[in-house]
Amino acid sequence: MATMMILGSNTRMLSCILNTPSLVPTLTLILFFTYKSQPPLNPFSHSKTNTIILLLLIMALSGFEGFEKRLELHFFGDDPFHYLGLRSLDFDQCINQTLQAVQCTVVSAVGNSFFDAYVLSESSLFVYPTKIIIKTCGTTQLLKSIQPLIFYADTQLGLTLRSCRYTRGSFIFPSAQPFPHTSFKDEVSYLEDTLPPTLHNRKASIMPSNSSSHAWHVFTATYYQQPHKPYTLEICMTDLDPILARKFFRPRNDGKTGDSAGKEMTEFTGIDQINQEALICDFAFDPCGYSMNAMHGEWYSTIHVTPEDGYSYASFECVGSTNNGMEIDVPHVFRKVIQIFRPGTMSVSITSAGGDLRRTVVSAVEAMGFKRRSCAMDEFPEAGSVVFQTFTAIRRKKKEVN
Image 1 (spheres, one colour):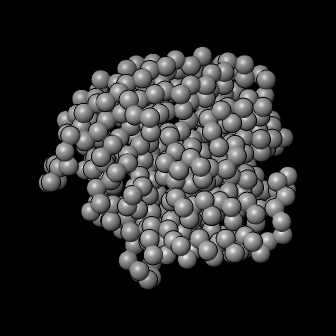
Image 2: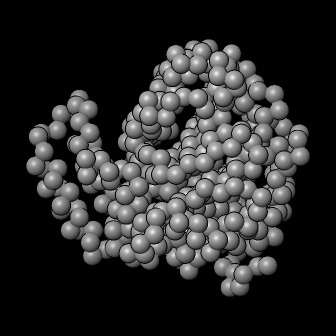
């Protein structure tokens, strides 16, 4: 049980220990002898103990993976629960069981009249009546959530899967990823085998940049396109300013809960100024790391931070629409996000069914002292377009930009 807990919120504690060079050899030896004390490894066995120890041995030689995997599933059908749909799924029997397959847990949650938002031990989960978005980092097995979610939606609600979108950046520590996330080829094969044949419009694409370490991986499968689909803006940042990254470390033995410490981080770092009208659910991990979900009507935004030196990472994601007055103030968002993290490198992905935010993004980012290094665009059948751009800081700003 203690070993299993490491794959929950304590994964971040492990990552901080691993970032202390003097402790890495000791921890590696402990894990090695723990592994040797187990029965011989059967390659066809599903032993969770062996799998976990192997993953920890790999992590002892690398670090915590900040880059998230993101899965978005849309369903359709008659709703027997007065438009609650997927939100009416039993938490323990359905949601929690699904997250166990992914190997993460819920640490905080909030909801409104449109959707429910969960902060996870590794990122976030959003549940709408006919849509689920799961975003997980670390060594989680996100794609293993697909089968149980399709099953629960069908058997308990009579809902049928209409579309699937899977995206991720390039892992910092790809060798630490378990199957099916060992490669994009393995992920696509798993998706092809898992999704129902009715989702016949399928495409997989690796969108490149001018750096071999930065690419955007996209897989879509659809039955038909959703009208008036909102756009999604995803910002991935690496090489965070060390001084600003330290704000996402908790003082030792601070005696606070993750919720109360998270609220302090939200205010202290200025994250609450990105959208002052949003309801924020935040959580600070011990000893370091931070996650936040924000709700503004039917739209969400989310932030996740891995602040450790050497592999620091932060992400910001939000959704908006040009059809109902929920247009994102792109310059404001980028100004605040860059002020909070001051990354050395940043990638921006825009997923939309129409419109062009590409130039707006470039203007907003370049105004903050960045230079665009690459831009890739691709179309996906019945799933809209994706624009992937990368930027690097021209110089580290020494003063806050007002």
